[in-house]
Image 1 (cartoon, rainbow, N blue to C red):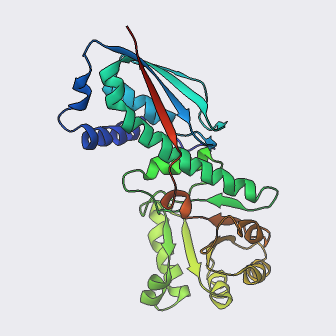
Image 2 (image 1 turned 30 degrees about the vertical axis):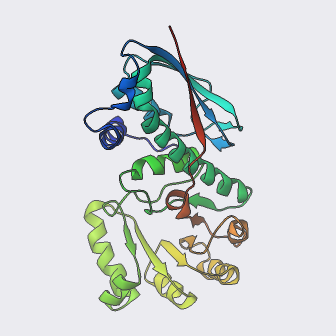
Image 3 (image 1 turned 180 degrees about the vertical axis):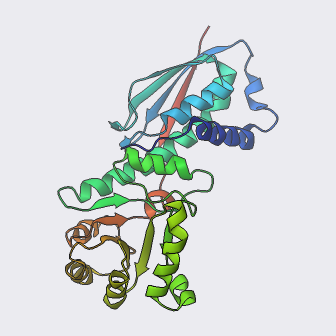
Length: 283
């Protein structure tokens, strides 16, 4: 299921991007007559899962409101290298001013969607699901988490405000896993927050289960230890594997029987999809 994005978030993302790129004015675009019309095409230079169409449309809405965009692909569609994505017609100056902002969103979000799809395909047929983390680009958390869902992945909590993740420092401060779980339950109750606890070995896993944990993060467990954790858990809690996971070992991890696999690189280590905007002047 795709993450529902509030249109005001898209508008703010685009407004910020325009402000940092155009500033007071696009003086380079003034090299072209203000009445000049043009047609432009956006082409994918490599295979990709396309994501970010709403952001592209908002870029042109804010900079080139009279431009017409005709899409040849849909959000979430897998495209081949050199495939035409869309055609844009309108005022030449405005199209050129909107170009970089629009491509930045499209290449970044398509990168996250594409990488997510690769992980989803890698574990196809297993019980596990691919999930994101909070390791996102500043200002683009919702956009990148949306892109994860376009690629077939699932979202973790959006921020610190909508879920509790107990880590080693929280355990140390409380004195024990049992104590920190009790404290978390008191904080969670009025707000109906999820509680997840991170454990680093099988002994901590057992302590967490005994304390009533229902969502447990297994941090940097190897495959053999993950298999042991699944047996100890006996379906009492949802188990999530994280740390040291990439495309070369994600299927092995999934086959251990864990429920979820979280991948920080979906949003923090992405390589932008290569896109090109071709431009031709009209009458």
